[in-house]
Amino acid sequence: MRNCERVERSATSTGGGGLEAIIFDVDGTLVDSERDGHRVAFNRAFEEAELPDRWDVELYGELLEITGGDRRIKAYFERRGMPADEAAELAQRLHPRKTEIFAAMARNGDFEPRPGVVELIGDLEDAGVRLAVATTGTGAWVHPMLENLFGAGRFEVVVTADEAPVRKPDPSAHLLALERLGLAAAQAPAIEDSLNGLQAAKAAGLACAIVVNDYTRDQDFEAADLVLDSFGGPDAEARVLSDPHALAPAGRLDVDTLRRLARAQPIG
Image (cartoon, rainbow, N blue to C red; front, top):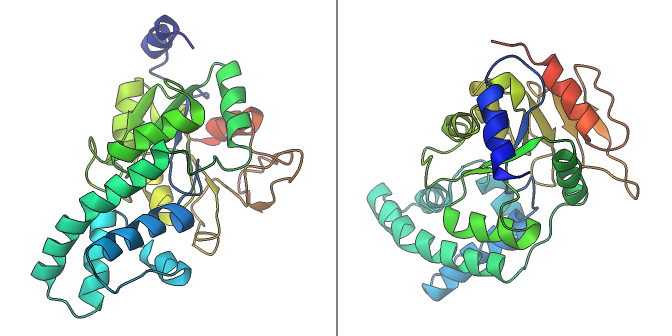
């Protein structure tokens, strides 16, 4: 959508309900980048620092309950018996390098969008629905990843930890995305993959669809407005795990389903 059209929509769409925008999470939602991306980057940072620690797939899944890579490192080493101040210092030293490694992976195109994401984004654009991101990831890797996978300028608003440093489940990233979009919460549902993301979206007043991944499928999504096992598509239909509003998606998360989701959200 052209910039002038975006400005006009923002100026005229600040009240009421109806689908005007979608606010996406990135890690685990747009891109399944945790197991073979972040985990690998953490382990490379540990190796460079000559630490013996390595996070396997199962351990990393447990650590994902802690949002923010620096907090994840600190919590891990505290659990290993390291004093809190030493763990904090080590996290402050290691996490920037981990981010550099992961950003290089993003620039190099080491990741793919989750199946069905590219089609959904294209359909939303064709329908005039604005695209936004609210993530706890840092801009150093978020921006190159989005540009590399989806093209420059596809997302009108991108809020990262650089602008909203308090991590999910805090709602600050979603609230800032709404502010920059100039929209009410009822006009911009969120798509997330985790309980922390769901709690952040709900705290911001957003309807929230969850698309689980291997790390998050067993989390408690009772408060979600829709839970699917994938984005779906002609080759692999999405399975509905929870549908309290009877949205009845037809094998995939599509624009019509998201419009029904927005209408199901109370205007407040």
